[in-house]
Length: 517
Ligand SMILES: [Zn+2]
Image 1 (tube, rainbow, N blue to C red):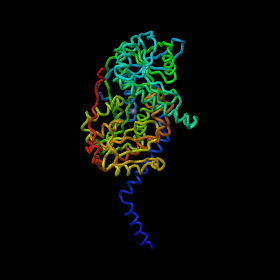
Image 2 (cartoon, rainbow, N blue to C red):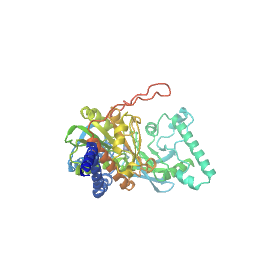
Image 3 (spheres, helix red, strand yellow):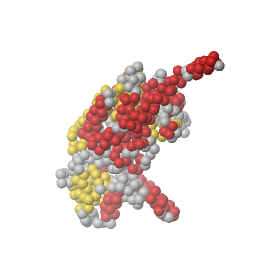
Image 4 (cartoon, rainbow, N blue to C red):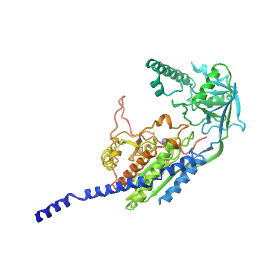
């Protein structure tokens, strides 16, 4: 019996071979990560400082610089080596107050704001009659209309048929009424797009054509199909101010103009032109103790549009990475590979910061294990694709097994996936053949509520889901750091397209290092 028992123990020890013990160590590490995240989360503090105190982070603006400095300060405090790395320069524009007032036929403050990079107005603003851009049936139609707009403020957005959400219509209209609304809505859009094609411009470039024709101001409205929510991008005009006005007030002006009332509006925008400023990426590194020249990269762009405060695009990505590093510093101080955090500048103008980083650091690029990028809102991570790397299923599927069960069960993986062509910063790495992956979140109606809107604010952050993401990133980073060797970079054979042509791996991304205006 004893003898037999000894034998069993020997067998048991044999079964508990190195990988099994390793797995147990890993499970213990995963528990420590989860525990630290739940016990000492700093996410709300990070979010308050970045989203509320610093606010929007438009490329080239003083607030963007404050954000870069904040990132460096926090990572240094976590024991990382952090730096702001210059890669170019950009026009520096600082938002001031915006006021839009209807002055005739009655006084009303309107919900509106100057677009980013829009020229400022005179101190007291400009006041003029408002006209609505009509539907054009030809290019010459547009050209002759241009001759009538001198001295006017032009409404250049389509005025939607209804300011109610589609869900609201569906719920409350009769089935027949809903169907009719859908038909009218798509007819209106088709007509509007047809008319726009005769202008030879987009809504973004049209203000410059109107400026050249003598207009004194432009008002756009870029509704997201939810009441009160509108997108705020940038202006391409050189002299005249471009403002966005929310759907509700925009419709008011539009109807008055159409009825021949000749409404008047005062536009006041006190932005500042501050010349040219340097653009940066904020980089933090925790040197690997065993393989310092190999990297696991945590990626999230720091810049934002400035219609609100860039809470879910992409402060949530930034604080997820910061919290993941905070956790790892505490429970995994002996990181085998170097953990590198990239908080990129100017993602919104075309992934400029991240692509500059890849261009400027071939020595890092060739030794990157994997890149984890997060940039689609506050929701919990539920999708990971293989970005077109043949063997991605092997290591990612294996690592995902270590996530807490309730997180893991929700994650859908798609392997080998396709290489991205520019949705977010992981594309900058994928284009150079580096295994880089977007960690995709549940939507929380990102497209209509927060993405580049006037409502992307602190209150939209769902902290429990961001905490879940910090845990996921910390675990995946730990596992990628511990992996015995660098993972395969083998690419899939891309398909033949419908015209019989071989599709090719995307390689066209190039960083734009100046604003050029
Ligand atoms: Zn983004």
